[in-house]
Each structure stands twice: as C-alpha cells, then as structure tokens.
Image (cartoon, rainbow, N blue to C red):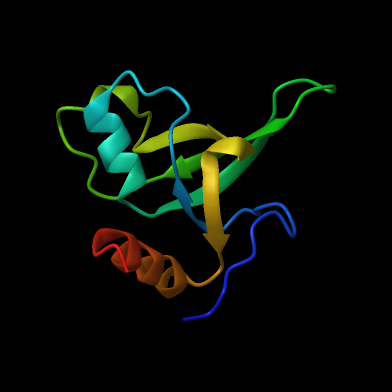
Length: 102
C-alpha cells in the first residue's frame, strides 16, 4: 500500500477525504464520518484571519443523521481531515486496514 503523507499540501476541491469529527457528542454521526469517504466540493474562508473550512459531501447519509447534513454535505476544518487523496482507492485501502486492525 502506498503511504499517504498528511499535511504536505492542503486538500483541494475534488479531493477525496477521510475525516473525524472534533465534536464527539453524536455517536451515529461520528461512526458515519469515521467510516465513509467524502469529497470536497468547496473551500470557504470564514474570515480573512481564520482558517478555511471544507465543504465535504457524502453518499448515502443515513436517515437518523440526515438532518445534520446540508445537501448530503458538512463543513469540516482542516484539523478534522485525517487523509486526503485524488485517488479514492487509496482511502478505501485505509478504511480496510482500519476495519481489520492491520
């Protein structure tokens, strides 16, 4: 498996991402975000002097957390993005490794 370097560059629009919520108050949301690949479709600067956040969309958002998403997407800070890649298969490999504790 290829090694994916974190923070060598910033994620870009069109990148696939694996995220982890900073807010751990909703178990269903955390499980979904931790175990699904999203795709960045927009990058938004909150203000001139603060960090950017990334609008990440997901496929097949479960009904029990659908109200937390807007158009199947969610704003994520850079600190919440664990891995990103142009190649979705690289992130799928990471999910498999994490799933089986390899």
